Amino acid sequence: MALEILGFEYPKNVRFKCLRCALCCGDVKDKGRLILLLTVEAEHISKKTLKRVDEFAEEIKGFEPYAFRMKKTEDGKCMFLKVNSCTIYQIRPLICKFYPFELKETRSNRYTFAHTSECPAIGKGPLLKRNYFVRLFKKFAKAMTATRK
Figure 1 (tube, rainbow, N blue to C red):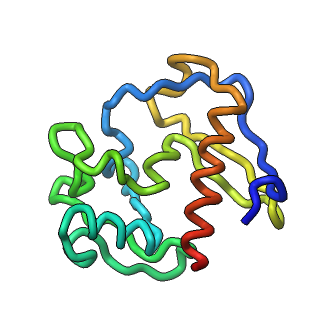
Figure 2: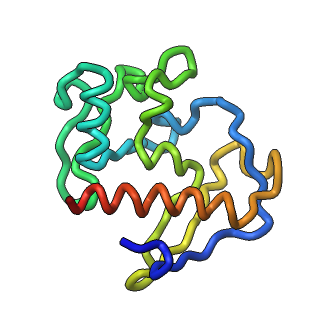
Figure 3: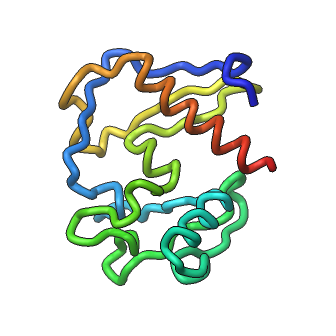
């Protein structure tokens, strides 16, 4: 998938700097979170953590291209979250890298970055420039290329 043939829109005038609150790492009062994984991500996490995929994820249908969802602890948090810190941060799934943004396909080869206002870090920190979203989009393109192999 060549990045130059794909296009995306991104929110202008959005400030964001992660507060490391871990709100995104589990269920909240009014919402259960699905931490979705591509097959290639589940396999990579498995290899790096020496855990079988079924120890930390469950297969799902209807969320393509995602094939798994992360298992959670009894309190609804990601099983890799320990004391508000991600124990697999360097290899965390794409969906986690994107939060509080998500990429939605608007039409063939066109995408839009949207964001959630539930994240307390929206409106804080630096004004995000196009380059921030280009980096995220490249991660998406790389993951989709790996998924198709």
